[in-house]
Image: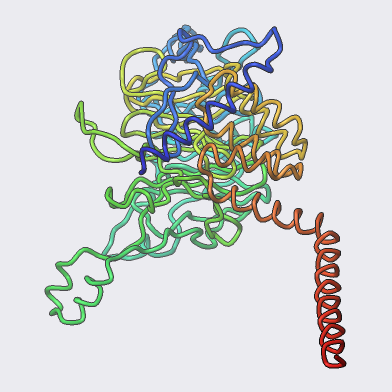
Length: 511
């Protein structure tokens, strides 16, 4: 029965796709198999489907491309060594070259990348030199102030664009750092600054959430602690254990985040990779936090944003996807990087998988240990700590159509959104989200019957139910007059029949 339903859905989808193809203008562009390399998505059945590339790798950026003047006056170009962080502001890329204890600023003029400066030290109010020790991450404000995670020195630096210190955040006087029995170090890794000037830091081995520092650099609170997960049976069983047995049991503690980013609306995105592999569908490895630290990420897709739905353990890469960083777009879509198999997963604002690409390897577009992802416009920049370079990905026509369809939908131009989704279908007739996208646009246009056809083609029960509910309401409203008239006719008919029978009865009694 499941196979029959799947076959029926495939026929319906094919019918819609064929209709779209034969109404295509003569200058329409169709997908070229040669352009499809390694991108894929998942269909309604959870099966992997090949897809045209939404992004195409174009080049590597490495440290030896840029020469900087040294103290002896010589010009030297050095490769990056295990870089851990990057930040893009405008046309500039700021690289945390962790192994070389420096920040490298790179500018893109539209054609090539040029080294702007190499930053190894900063200066306090008294002129004291502050050198970097394993800088792990960087955030740059609109006026080019830098917030740097100085991991090796156990501090966070806030400096201006002239490399002069504005403030410094060191070990906060809070648990677990002030616990003498713990001896926990303050080792900041990833960080961001919000629009109010507050700094949020993800620190190593801290599972209480993000550390928040105010505009003066004072620690204020932990934000967004990951919810505690535990097995209820084990929890109840603890009541019958001795203290020694309880001490030997695993602790029910929150999991720690491994990265943080901020979107255009000021909401924080966090990722975490520590969870039970068997519960990957409910682990919520990427989250969107509001001002109170609550997770408000929308997860209305057929499957939650968790990376690969199916996998094998070939090549020594075991288990589900483990997200390590996230970057957001203005249309509220976002991309995550998976360190397990070196893949990039893109999701829309509803949590639907748009496409996935990448992998572990030594070719352009593949990685060994991806640690950071950012964007310049629509282009993606993925940092690899082991290869010590950055891979640049450019948007393709297919990816651009998807972005435009999402943007126009959010701008409430549903006609234009549907037009772009139909163009996506011409490039990939098996792209489930395009059917759903057209259906959503038709739903917003109050074309409920047509929307139902598209949702039915991809077995989108949630949206089909919404369309059907509105369609039923519309039909009732359109025909309520006819129903009332019919009811009146029926009532009059019944009254007449009763009247005629009464007259007939009276006539018989008279006889």
